[in-house]
Image (cartoon, rainbow, N blue to C red; front, side):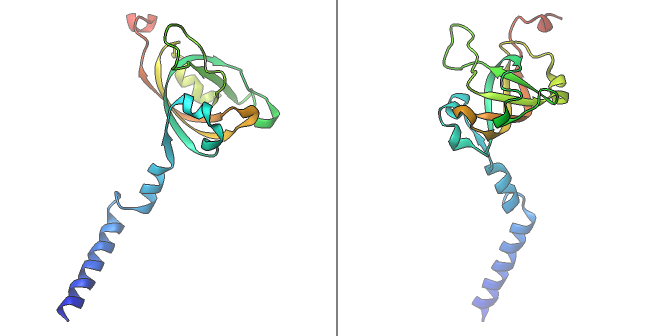
Length: 157
């Protein structure tokens, strides 16, 4: 009898722990597991592997661009979106944009990052929504500036 009471008590405590602890919550686990930390070159190498997944990557900003906008098979309208390029992280002696990766952000969100300069370190998070032309096409929903490029005009002010 004592063993049954002990088992029931443990079951109730375990259930309560699952209910009230965010670290054991299934929805918490699902949300953190649904974002894949990766590198830009890994996504470019296997875009199909990341299709319909949310990815986060550290990168070096290159420039805003219209590359890929208004392409019917992976439509992002140039009136609503702006694209941007990051630099290849496998080339260190000069700047080479990673043009195989199509990155898009809403124009109103892009205005918050008008101060980005070529060479700034960023972290981007977004969903791979297409692999048209064999390239990853990504809707970016979050940009974090990790480090401004040393010696930029904005650093001197």
